[in-house]
Amino acid sequence: MKALVCILLLLETFVFVVQQQVDGGLNENEISQQISSEDGRQNPPRTDTLGAEASTDSQQSCHLCFPDIHAALRELTATVTEQKANIRALETQLREQQTFILEELKKKDDEILNLTLSQVEELRKENRDKKIAFSAGLRQSGAGYTGPYKSEITLTYKKVITNIGNAYNPVTGVFRAPLKGVYMFRVSVYGHGGTGATASIIKNGEQVVVAHDYQAKDRLNSSNGVVLLLEVGDVVYVRLWPNRRISDNSQENLNTFSGFLLFPLR
Image (tube, rainbow, N blue to C red; front, side, top):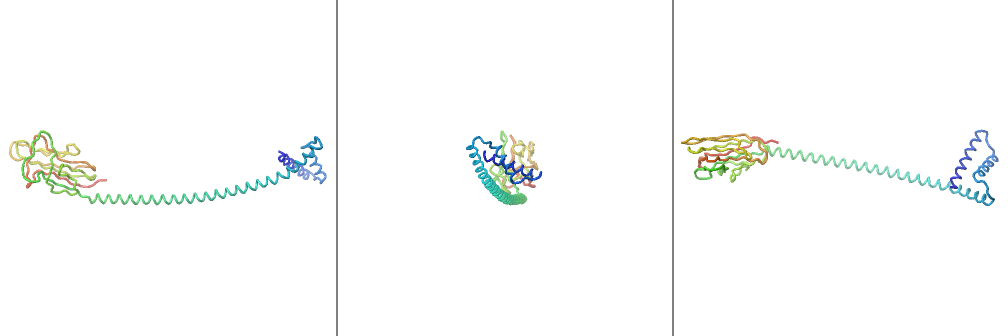
């Protein structure tokens, strides 16, 4: 508090001196008297002892406060300068790290793009070169009848004539699409009169087309075909109708089931 009073006193005296110099100037005695007068106003004497103590404390405070303030300002300035330097260094480091990260991300993006394009091209080539075709006869050996049965059955064409791509299973009689595309299927039926010869091409459990012939006597012969759009995993097979009978032998292959890929689709 004494230091603050000292500072205010000096400022007031300085303003007064400047004003007097502007108005006409003061001599040294007048300045001394003015300072003494100001000291008297700020510290009115109560006793000789108190006045002396107050004068001594004020002088010591004035002498001590200014060096402390200047030292604090110098220390604060040095600290601010140091912090500014640290901030500039940190900003530079952050910019360098940001540039490095962006470059690494761009490299990764390029790698992923190149890999994806390579995989797509490889898949296209694989699909383009993929060949799927099969044809199978009903009997592996010998001759005989199949049917009649009280309910529908899936025909198993056991004699594999062609099975490129191995998409047809001779054990189950089911063709399973290995890739999306457009396929052609055909079925032929042969039998003897009296029961009729009827079979259907089935896709995923749904009847698509039927090959049918019926007459009381003599031979029965029919065929039918269809073009199907299949997704990967779709199944196609042939079912013999109830109460129908077909006839075949392994030499003539009168009942057949065939199919092939016309073209793949993306």
